Image (cartoon, rainbow, N blue to C red; front, side, top):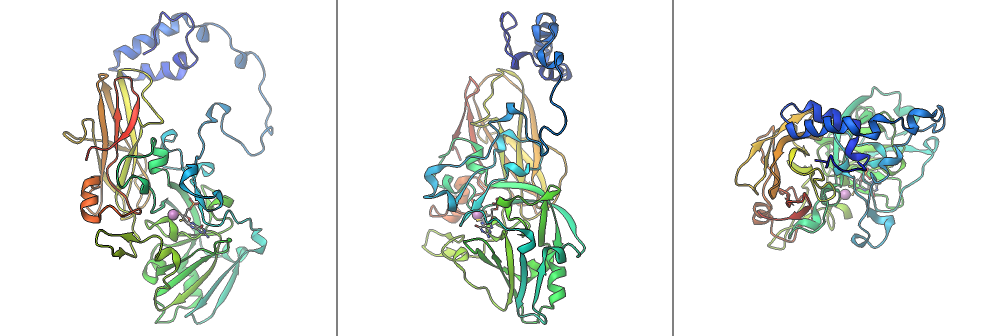
Length: 427
Ligand SMILES: Nc1nc2c(c(=O)[nH]1)N[C@H]1C(S)=C(S)[C@@H](COP(=O)(O)O)O[C@H]1N2
Ligand SMILES: [Mo]
């Protein structure tokens, strides 16, 4: 904890929030006494501060609000050497800075293959053609007259963690696991639109096409399209962000992000898959024998500790420590998350907190009293189908080392005595 003899306590060391937090942790004697001592001689408590003395800005200074200036480091980040050009590239959600299960719109990672398309919704059209009774074209206005639903889903790029197949590489969960976001979508069940067009009996597949410069296309089996797919126009209550496919995107819950076509302009009904680039040369899994697995749509059960993690080291020394992270499964809900402090020798069941929704992120916590010794932190998730997250060795045994996509292996963070955290691999 903070040295109470320090003549110039830092702002962080004496914040009211820390004091309250310390007071709330009943068993945390160290924290509580430090908090009490701070209250006694701390100028941040005893002297009136500027923000208490002067009026603040009026309403309307920011008609669309922004985060506090003190949160300026909470941003998406890319890894420039990963791709040749930012137009066909990726950036990552700062998972280590977030809590709960919802990703703020401005922090949702971006993956596009031809840059962000800028489309006036008045000019946007969605066509349904192919093996249908009546080919249809919808405007955005048309779509908003169908009954709509609100659902919380994660979207994970199949390449999330792809750089980590052969060993620990990137130092931060933002980069190892940040190709994921989770928001509330508002949209029309795809089923309603397909029913309107009337799918012919041999219509077994759907080709979804984007209106961006990459005109991304993916084949989707009709059962999935009729099951839980959504044509969404809102995220977290407001219009989709341009980066996320404004004005319209496809949601394919629990399945790989690549299928969630943004700037959705066309749905063609067919009798077999199309074998487009994104389902042959990309988004297939090269196995050890040189054959490629295809149509691996579901994003399997997975989890990661988001704090402590390399970008979120332990700065407060020993004592109460909140370990937290995220778990998810494309199969359904998360039933249990176990956490180990010793690289997998012993496990403790973490506390799941917040909503538990199918195909959505789940938040877990393990509140410990850290004695300052080294930790090898891992989390292991189990979903409601009984599927358990594998170790990276188990994954490599099953899939070989050529793979990029669908790495749901257990992540290890090494925490040293000073609380510095590093990406390592032990199993
Ligand atoms: N039209 C279009 N849709 C697209 C893409 C694209 O480049 N163009 N990228 C796909 C990929 S690979 C992923 S992982 C997700 C990323 O969604 P996001 O940018 O909202 O995070 O969108 C998918 N949909
Ligand atoms: Mo992706």
